[in-house]
Image (tube, rainbow, N blue to C red; front, side, top):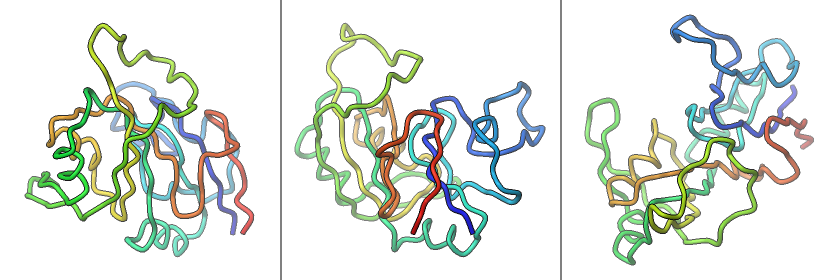
Length: 185
């Protein structure tokens, strides 16, 4: 069964068909190529997030890749310069809301990083007059709805740009925005 890596652009929905809920037409994964019948996104990235989205026709593989046994690495541009305390809070787990219930995130890896070599997003985030920003690498083993955005906001570091770089052994390396590639395992 085929599996693909896809570089989801900013503003694209992680679905293949417009389910009629949206009032206007949005860009969808299916707008970027022809995929085998039954292809589905493995996990989700919200419309404002970019980066690696795995696609497959195999439900078991999808479940494996979204499980807590598989690391997911995100590159996150945050507003401001994090303190040691803020980084430790993120690493140790913070309280967020999931489905209107309190939830404490699992411990994760969080490191500051140099600005990654990423394509321009298309829509500017902001200019330098608004103060400094910092890039973080955040590696999780879970994936709650808008989790990273909620985590960084909780510690006072709002997310400005969110790019999923890696899921397990699969990365964005070699892909351009909107491009997909067959995974050969």
